[in-house]
Length: 447
Image 1 (cartoon, helix red, strand yellow):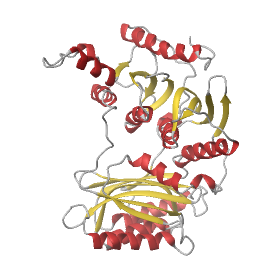
Image 2 (cartoon, one colour; image 1 turned 90 degrees about the horizontal axis):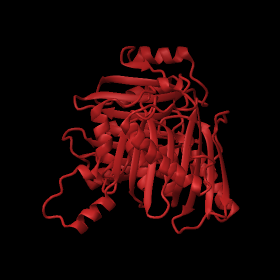
Image 3 (cartoon, one colour; image 1 turned 120 degrees about the vertical axis):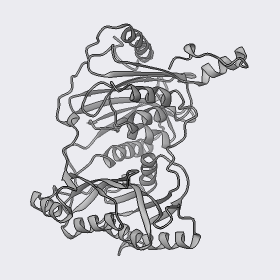
Image 4 (cartoon, one colour; image 1 turned 90 degrees about the vertical axis):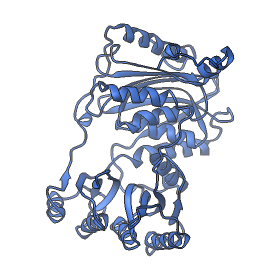
């Protein structure tokens, strides 16, 4: 998005043109400068939260960020992202490229994705096998159609954001008596026999980004303080050091690569009121190493051992919440009354626990649902049980899906630059960001 190519309206004076240039991000996208990824460069005035908004645009398109260089000292913000699709390919669809340019070019004014005409239900509580089937059964009984939903579980806790509408009218649920009934019934389900204090339900008409809101809900629920159900060898390694000479706290993160990883990290930092001034992210094979130089919004670094430990726990939790455990099952079928209640009841009756779910409904009333399931104690589900469940629900409707091919291919450790004018231009802009980091002593080389 090149502002210089715009034709300015006649009524704008030179001062207004300058203000527009200062507040409108400059976006460049290049496919020529690198052999195996597309480079996205953003150059903008800095404001709190702009980094998470930029990363959100890329991750909402299910793009994988293979490298990133972030620099936002002073009043300016310069980022370079190396991205691919989930199959590890460069971006070639012009409509996707155009959408990225337009979306990143308006992030100063962007609002969260709006789901018109729906009522949002927020639920948090203790996870248990069969909980989702009880939730969806209550909603079906109360004549609420589930249009979209996302469910996360972590450390024995569950958070869900469910978008519903009236079954008969298709309108949002606005009757206060019915809203009170929904909240009370769902709260009783979440309480179960032993979660009287921490089970929470709320109804909202507010516009919010679903995944960011789920992070906020689990953070408020303090899932990071609870002991994990199962420890694996893939737990993220997070360390925090103070760089007193520069006045930063330095966070290093080593973990397994997956889509939306950078969003989960910077979203959590932003909501914890930290500002990322500089950062680098690099992937090698299926591993990621990232380094962040942060301060509080008041300009101070992390000041105590207790705060340091809290940051470590919160970032580990943010990374683990979306790290899907279990078999991925995809349901594609015509939507009908009670579908989700029936499907999740079948899971429960066969001893399967849903660790994560994404529910959606298309405009032609087709249900597109994804479930990650394990056995009752979090171990891999038996293949015979999975097949029995598929037989019950429908072999053609419920399918076992492999993870995206990005997980099965070994990425190049170093991306080879290629020729081209656009590539050379973006390479030089990216070099500016890396040189800023080098001059501050934050990276060892900017070559």
